[in-house]
Length: 118
Image (cartoon, rainbow, N blue to C red; front, side):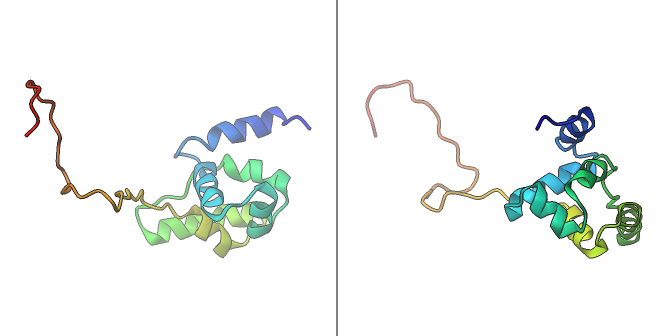
């Protein structure tokens, strides 16, 4: 089945941090959820996901604003508020270092002009 233009728009919005779809996509990837499983987790049908993805991401300035935004979206689309809040929380990027790397953090290797090795 071909996606509708509206679904394509929601998919494009999911690549931009401004939209709730971006956080839902990150959550789905972390939890290994497809659209059907994500919709089930949120308490809606798959068709509703496109509408939810196009919403603005909840504000993060204060917990109160975050809760207000999540509650507003959940109420509008009949979603589970707690499940949406869990999915809408941003996760800071974690940079994992290779455990086998023995160089101290911040070490830089430079090229040598001479051919003899130390």
